[in-house]
Image 1: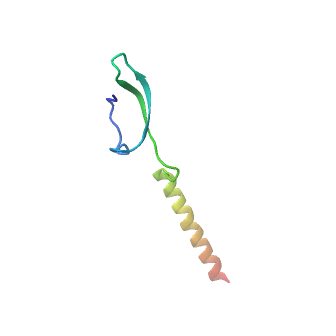
Image 2: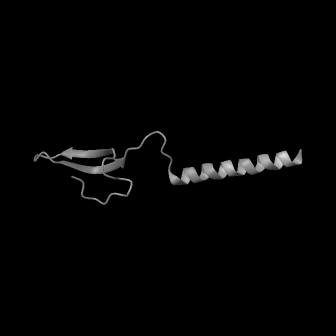
Image 3: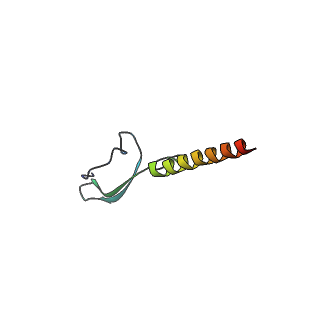
Length: 68
């Protein structure tokens, strides 16, 4: 049983990694809950940086083409 506040990333039916202990009453008490995601997941900050790098590359390639 986890009593903390979970971010929106945690939804019904999604996988998690929980660390904790099973108490004498048989209830699992998590001390830490981590989101589990697939290998395609990219944090928003990283996705934004990749997008900006692709856009900059496209601008540079267009400029090179126009110079020719």
